[in-house]
Every structure is written in C-alpha cells, then in structure tokens.
Amino acid sequence: MKTLTTKQVAGELSGAFADLGTFLPIVIAVLTLHLMDPSGLFIGFGLFALSVAVIYRRPIPVQPMKAAAAVVIADNLTAGAIAVTGLLLGATVLLLTLTGLVSRIGKKIPQSVLTGIQLGVGLILAWAGAGLILQEPMIGLMSLVLLLLLLPTRFKPVAAILVILGSVIWSGIDRPGQMPEITIGFYLPQWVSIDWSDAWTPAETILLPQLALTLTNAMIVTAAIARRLFEDQARPITPRQLGMSTGVLNLLLAPLGAFPMCHGAGGLVVQHRFGARTGLAPAIFGITCLSFGLLLGPNALQLLLLIPLAAVGALLVFAGLDLAMSKELTQGSRENLPVIVITGLVCLLLNVALGLLVGIAIEYLRRRNGEKALP
Image (cartoon, rainbow, N blue to C red; front, side):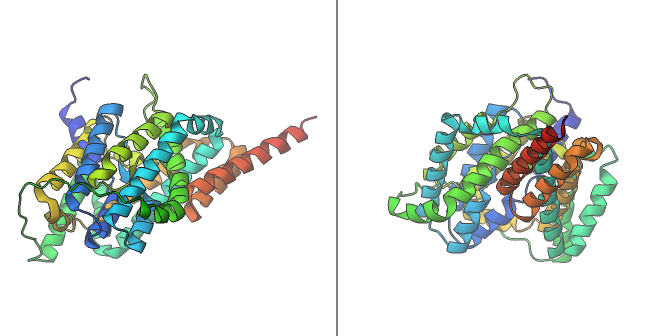
C-alpha cells in the first residue's frame, strides 16, 4: 500500500466521520431506550469496520440496518431478540450470497435503472439531511454556509470534520454547562444469551423488508457505485463480496451484543465526497467505535449527544445532491430519462427495493415498445 500524503490522510479522517446521518440517530435511540449494552454495540461496529478496512481497502461503510432498527426501537426489543435478529439476517444473507442469487440479480440490472437508483439514494440522503437541519435550523444553516466556504479551498479534505467540530463548539458556547462528566474505564461486551423463542418477531416483521434493503442498497447498489467511484481498482467490489462480509460478520458479532449491520450506498457516497479513498477511513471509524466501547462503555452516549444532528444533516444534503446529479442524468440519453426519474422518485417516496423493481419493469416495457416500433 503506497504512503498517503498529509492531504490524503486529512481526507480519510474527514470522510471517516462524514457518514453519521444514519449511525447517530439510531445508536442514540437504542441506547437512550436502554435496549442494548453500549460496550457490545460500539465494539460490534468497531470490529465490523476494521474488518471492512482489511478486506476491501476502500471506504465501504458500516451502518445499522434501518428496517431492523425501526422495529427494534418501535417494539422495544430485548438484547436477546436483537441478537437473534442479527443471526437470522446474517445467515439468510450468507445463504442467498452462496447460492449466487445476489450476483445474478446484480448482473441483470440495466444501466438506466442503476442511474435511477443513484438519483433516488441521493435524494433520500438530501431529504434526510434537510430533516435533521430543521431540528436546529441555526446550527444547520451555519454548517451549510461553512461547507460552502470550505469546499472550494485547500481545507476541502477536512471539511466534514471541521463542520462537526465547529458545530460541537458552537453548541457548547450556546448551551454552557452542558458538557457531561466522562469517566474512562475498561468495559468488555456482555455475551448475549440466545433464546430462539425471541425469533418470531424478527422473522415476522423484520426479515423480508430488511432483506429487500440489504440485497439492493447495501449490496447491489453499493457495488455498482463503488465501480464508478473506484474505476482504477484492479478487482472491482462485487455484490457477492459485500454479501459475504455482511453475512459472516453479523453471525460472528451478534452474540457479542452487536446491532445488526450492513453496508450502504449512501454512506459510500458521503465518505467519498468528503475525501475517503482507502481503507484508512473505515479503520479510523472502527478504532473510534472500539475506543467508545472499551473505554467509555455506558458513558459513550453522553459524548455522542454533544454532536448536533443538524450539522450532520448539512453533510448529507451536500453529498446527496452530489450523488443525485450524475453525468448519466444530466448528460445521458433522453430516452433513458423517464426510467431514471421514475426509478429515483419511487426510491425516494417508497423505498429502494421497490424502486429497483419498478425501474426494471419500466425499462423492460421501454425496450419492448422500442423493438415493436422497428420496421
């Protein structure tokens, strides 16, 4: 591996913490509700991210599974039920990967549909970012302005980290006396007792919707975007590889109290947009999570609450719009435009999995009508 310049290392550092828009709200909610042991949760993210850094040597993100998180938070699932969820999802993803189903699906998706999904994921990121900005408009708008000022300058590689640090400082000045007392210790994860009677809720309400998101957004779409962002790589990242890492690592880490985790196209875009290019970015994120879990344990939540989500929202808006405005959308064939736009809107208004299916159907009809029109 070639030596990185100071500027490149700064970009890796900035990119490593740019993808907090999904991570922070879910982790804060889970810990606030006391659903999981903080040490196990952070150590799980840390080990997953470090494994990704070694396996891919690219900024492939590590994120909590969104559909699983929604049910976990809404139903107040126990730590045992969450562990069973991770085991079920890990085993199912691994099975679908080993049978080759994911790879076959990935190869069949038309380029217009992939561009439409890219548009949809970008809009989802931007919309989510706007929602976070509205929680604290002053901090959010100031973060947007700071990004606008930093991105055209030599400070671009550290733009994300400067925005986050600046927002924390501003929040501290605006709310004096809010700094929590942090006690450093040594905390190990608690082995979760697995009770398969807890499997009914995950199997009934989580498995199918989460699989739809994981197979599309976390594997197929992430691999497609990685091919575009890292065109010079000798061995392209494939859906099969992403499925293997998702399945195996969830199976290994769930009993340690880890939250169900996967990769994500949006996270890849955000990290790349703010300077991440190598495995150093997930390694930095992984070491940070390990430090939170091992050294802070139950105190980690208080430290996370110092980061204003509105500042994270500003990062999401910029990265999302950057992804949405692809060359295929702005400079591509007009014949593909309806497929791209409809696919993107379905992804935004419903979900990525349904957007994929609708896009494929529309592209099929377009090609079929085109063939009929030929003399």
